[in-house]
Amino acid sequence: FSQRAKIDECIDAVFASPLMADNILARQSGAVTVNIVGGAKLSMHEVQKILDQVRFRFAQGTPMSVSAAINEDYQDRLS
Image (cartoon, rainbow, N blue to C red):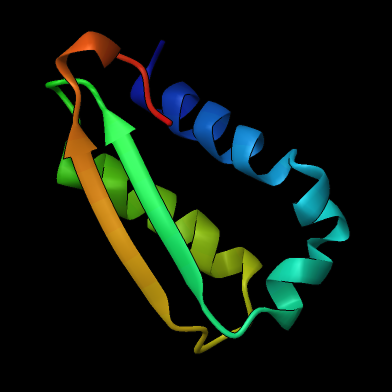
C-alpha cells in the first residue's frame, strides 16, 4: 500500500460505520476522540493527514482528543 492508500483505507473504515452514516453524528457531536494505531513506520505526517480528514467531517471547532500508538504487529497497517 502507498501511504495515501493506507490513510484513505483507514478513513473509509471509520466513516463506514452506521453511526457515522450521512455524517449526522459528526455534525451533532460535542467532541470527538481519535485513536490511531499503526506499525513501527507510523509517521506524524500520516497522523496529521488522518486528523485533517476527521476534522473536515466534523463541525468546525469540535474539540478533539487524539492519541497515536505504535503496535509492532501492525507492520504497515493503520486503524
